Length: 495
Ligand code: ADP
Image (cartoon, rainbow, N blue to C red; front, side, top):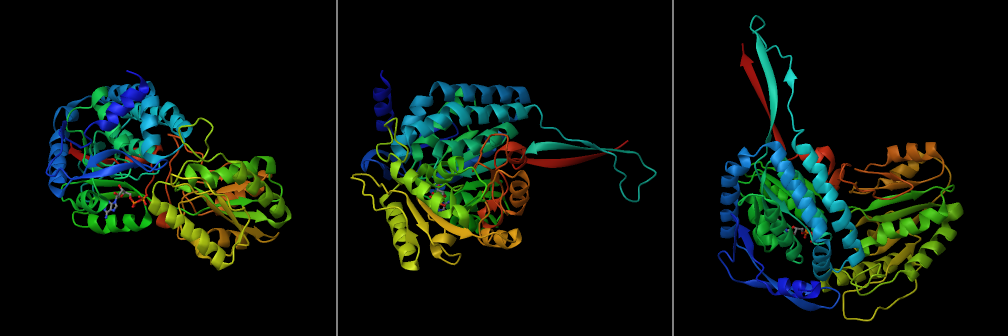
C-alpha cells in the first residue's frame, strides 16, 4: 500500500478510545469532525468520550499498575521504550503526515521531530529506567540514639497519570508526557486535544506495538470540558500532567484539590528576546524572527517581546520585516513551506482581533498587509514597533505570528530587566550579545525557566523545560520530569 493509501485508510478508520487495551466507542457514539486547517476540509471524525469512559480508563490504569507492568524489570521497561523509539523512526513519515493533516504544521517541521527529538526523547528516558535509585541515609531517629537503624529510600511510580495535551505540537507534547511516565513505571490515561486527536491515537498504538502491556496506556478522546475536567477531578488519578493555556491550568489546579493529586503544568508564555548593540545581526535577525513565527506563533516558547538597543533598532526592524515578507506561507505538505495555517477559524479570528487591537493601542505595524488566498486559516506574520509595556498586545499571549518590538537605551541593566520581567509569564527568554559577560549577566536577570544566549528556545531531551510564575509548575524533559512521575518512600529498619 502506498503511503497515501495508508494515510487515507487510517483517516477513514474509527477513531475512539483505548481502555484496558480494547479499542471502543465507550458510552457514547457522538463524534466530532476533525478539520485540516490548511484546507478547511473534514478529514476524519473522533468519538467524544464521557465521564463513564474516564472512569473505565482510570480503573484499567489502576489495575495495570499491579499487573505485569508492575513486575517488569527496569531493563525490560527500557527495552520497550527503545523499541518505541525505533518504531517512531520507522513510521516517521506516516506520523508526520497525520500531524500535518490535523494540525497544519509544515511537514518538514514535523519530520524533524519524528526523526529527531521524539525517538531521542524515548531513548533518553529508556536510559533512566535502570538508574532510578534511592539512597541510604545515616539517620539517627530522634530520642533513639542507643538503637541502630538502617534508613534507605526507594523511588516508586507515582501511580495513575492523566496526560492532558494541546493541539499546537501534538506528537511532541504527548510523547513528552508518555516517555517519562513509562520510564518511571506509571500507567497513563491520555486525553489529546480534541482538534488533534489522531496523533495521540497513533502514539498509543505504537506504544502497544512496542510491547507496552494492555491497560498501561489508555486513551480517552473528547472535549476538555467533559473528559479533561473528569480527569482533573478524578479521585483515583494520582497525577495530572497538563500542557495548555494558563486559564485552563488554573481550572485544573482547582479541580485537582479534591484528592490533592500532584499537578505539573506547562502553560502560556510571552517570552522576551533582548538584543544588545553588539549582537551579530546577521544571526540574530532571522533567528529572532523565527523564534516568534515558528509554528505560526502557536508555540508557548515563542519570543514575542523583542527588546532591541536603539542604535540597531531600525536596521533590526527592517531585517525582521524582510524575513517576514519572504517566509513561504501555504500548503504545509509542500517541502518549502515555512509557515502553515493557524489551527482553526476561531484562532485566526482571535489573532486578527489582536492585530487590530495593536493598531488601536498605537503600535506601528512595520509589515505591509499580506493577504493569503484561502481556503485555510492563514495569517501572515506581523511586526509591531513603538510598543509600550502596558499595551495588551505586549502583555497577553496571542498564540499567533505577532512580534512586538520595544527599544532600549544604554544604561542600567536592572531597569531594563524590570521591563523585560514585567509579565505574568516566565517560560523562555533569550539574550543576544557578542560580549560573554553582558550575555551571562543579563541571562541571570531574566526570570524564566530557560534562557538561551545567541539562540532562542534550545529544546533537548536532556534539558529541563518549563515555566516560572504563571507559565507553569514543574519541568518537562531532563531528569526533573522523571522525578515528577516518581514518589519517594523512606524505609527505616531497626537492626
Ligand atoms: P489550547 O488553547 O492550547 O487549546 P487549552 O488549555 O484550551 O489550550 O487546551 C489544552 C487541553 O486542555 C486540551 O486537551 C483541552 O481539551 C483540555 N481542556 C480544556 N478545558 C479543560 C478543562 N476544563 N479541564 C481539563 N482539560 C481541559
